[in-house]
Amino acid sequence: MSRSVAGDWTLTDSSNFQNIGGSGQPLGSSLHTTTADGSFTFSFSGSFISVLGTAATSGDQPNVQCFLDGVSFATVTLGGPQNNIHICATTFPDGQHELAVNVSTQGEPFYLDNLQYQPSANVPLNNATILIPSGDPSITLSIGWSMVDGFPQNMTQTTNAFANITFIGDQLGWFGTFLEGEPQTPSPAEYSIDGGQPISFTLQLPPERSNSTNTFNIPFFTTDVLQQGLHTVIVRYLGNESTIPLTLNNLLVVNASSSENPSTPSSSMITTSLMATPTSQSRITRGNSTGAIVGGAVGGVVGLFLVILIFFLMRRYSIRKKQRVDPITAVMPFEVNQFPPTRQLPLSSSSFHTPKSNLASGGVTNDTGRTPGEGTLDQPGGPPTVTSLPTSPSHTRTISSLSEGRIPSRTTASIPTSGQTNSSDQGPLPQSPIHVRHEDSGLRVPHQDGIIELPPNYTIN
Image (tube, rainbow, N blue to C red; front, side, top):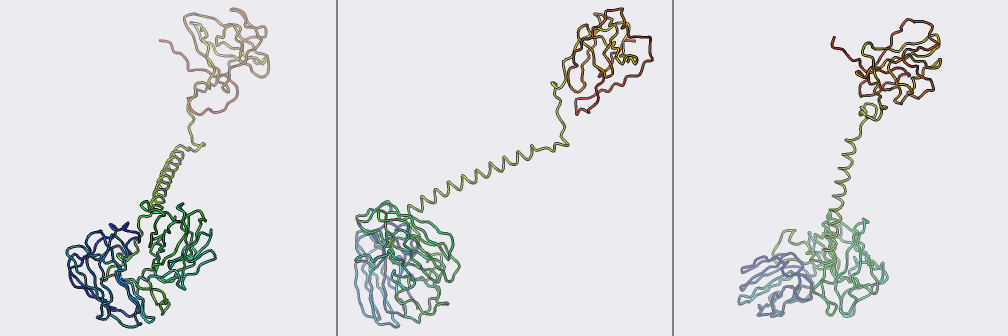
């Protein structure tokens, strides 16, 4: 296989020609263009060849003349705007042949899309791009499929009808037709690759189309680029008789190879461009499917929501982790309401008194200046007793009962008036020392009931 060109040919991005006419979009990502007289030749081994191009306007069009082995077989003037125009095509005995195409133009651009030919059985594919028709043996259809009247393609409106496809290559494209008079309600469908998870796609009319005309060569789905090799794709229709049918016109396999299958299927055709192009330019053009756009937008919104949700969850977890403190080593804050109310008690200006233990009666003699009627501190071993409480309005002393954090209970013992002593007093007893422990505002150390006293007052002397 060889090719040669004459004249000034350039590459034009095919994305500007997606919606011209009713024959779908250009096959590849670029078109070969000339605005002056030019020609090209292509040598190959096979039994059929076709030249496909695009007419971009409805005005004057270039004239094209086609030759096979030096013999003219077609002279064509392109018509109105259209993609995938079969400019010239012919069948001939299988063997080695040469195609020649002459283009004559007065400045109008001529757009060449691709060449398609039926190769001989012994032609190696060598990473070629091949076009497989719907009736090829590599495609197995389930019950529920039927032929479309007047068109070489299959269709189904049976729920769960499927097609099993086996191919060698690294990418597969499915091309179908939106048929005139069929339902316009979008249909769900899916495909899986090599037993993987199903991938959903939607059959949906392009915005500029209606069901009043047939629209051919629509790429219903295109797989991602796979590892080159043998693959199996299962396509399943999930619609019904009231939704758009699934049709199959042909399949396009990129980077097909005969390394595992030395003979090319009899019905497959190789598609090639005028000049050798990089692999990226021979990839299948996916088109701007409305379903794909909507699905991509929804997927983007969902993905953004998940990212935001994960961010807030991680931030919340981080805050909680920082706030978490080991309860054993935590320092408890000081709380005022842990302490009972205080009382102002008058003290004598001449002397300070300390409690005395009445060992004989087991009671307690309290000289701390409680007023009558307020009770005394209970001590185990006997009823409480108190001594007289000298008073002076000029000095006061604050006492707070802190034993176990509660207010001392009242008693029924009466408090003698000044100058009287309890009848149980038998005489002075040795004074025993009173141990006073002062505590700060931190953790409280449990202790037995006793006398809790504030720090002493000091005189000027």
